Amino acid sequence: MVGKDKIIDLPIAPEFLWFILAFLIILFIAIYLILIYHWKSYGLEHNPRIFARTIFWIIAIVLILIMAFSITGFEYS
Amino acid sequence: MIVLDKNEHLVLQIRQHWFIFFSQLIVLLFLALLPLIVIEIIKLLPVEIISSGRSILALVIFFYSAWLFILWMVGFVIWTDYYLDIWFVTNTKVINIEQKGLFRREISVLHLDKIQDVTSDVRGMLKTLIDYGNISVHTAGQKLDFVIRNVPQPDIIREKLSETIKLFRETAEETGDNS
Image 1 (tube, rainbow over the protein chains, first blue to last red):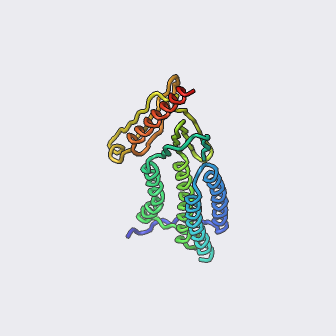
Image 2 (cartoon, each protein chain N blue to C red):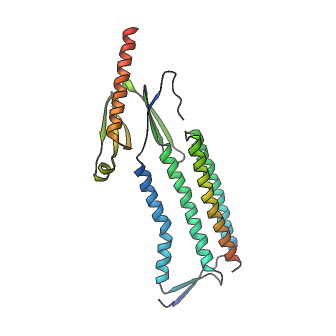
Image 3 (cartoon, rainbow over the protein chains, first blue to last red):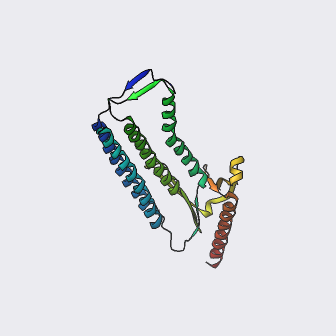
């Protein structure tokens, strides 16, 4: 175990983290719309498209929830 | 999606070898693990990081999730790029669709009567082991050849393409004799 000689303070406001999350959600929606346009227009068949869309959303929602809960945890800690 | 002519049918549909996509996934996986390595290195340093009395663990979880979220989106963009990069061989032409990122798409069409020769090329130990390589379609009177890169089983595809061209020529000759 190394002794901690120096302390670095990162004064991050929870509002800043909410802002990052909002930005990422907007980015996600933009990318999703672009991808869905490509999948529909350029030949991704119906079933793979539904599968890809489902996987894309499920993991994204899980990560968004983790981010939201971690901000809440950070805010009230 | 391609639209075929009345007497046209699809003979081959060729995508790049799965290893090309897999190798990009490996890079993403490494990038996903990178913050964990950085955290372990920081732990070894004689430095304590705090955030004005708030939970640093929650902060770490937030930034790591955000990083994974970005990589997740990048992964899907890579997969789309891979999936939509495709060659179609019909009984009359070869259609090469190249998806380059999200906002660039090139489609080139080559009629089978323009093709002089088809060659396959497998170079390197890895390509030989998992059997993928390039196929070049040489045309008459054109400076640029059609090249499809990193296709699985290039020798078999070359043979099928050559057979299709041969069949096309025979049909064209028969049609020419009848008319």
